[in-house]
Length: 164
Image (cartoon, rainbow, N blue to C red; front, side, top):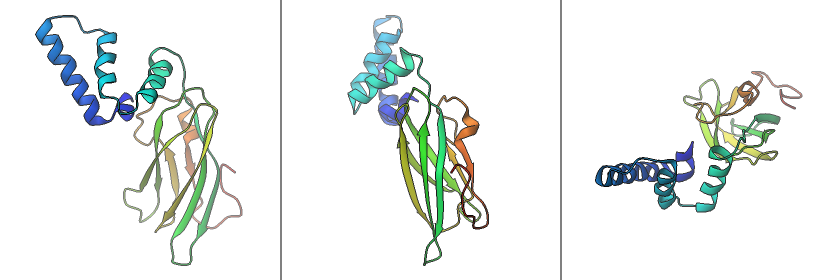
């Protein structure tokens, strides 16, 4: 999860640096040395410090829920999908959303950040009708009640959608 804050390449550089310093000096690998290496690579130090406080030094845990979904056909044959991602938990991190549908291939992903207790409205313009929306489809983020972070959309038009 930390690599989402630092970036994959930054995390790899930090790990290489940490390993090289350990091999050179023989000093033990410690949490403080690990964090020092990661801090040198952090593009946004404030975001990293929030992550460290919540995830390494605290007990915060997000609980993502999908709410107030709306789906509308467009004149060009596509679909507009809007949904509110609510974090009923206390922890926060960047998280992927995945919209999939028949004919949607691998689907479309978006990344959002939702603070503990907060909500974010997300909209998509899709060329195909979405059938399912999932928060953290690759299970990269530790979260509470993961089953509440999945929304099945009706295959036929409906007056209201699940999660309303």
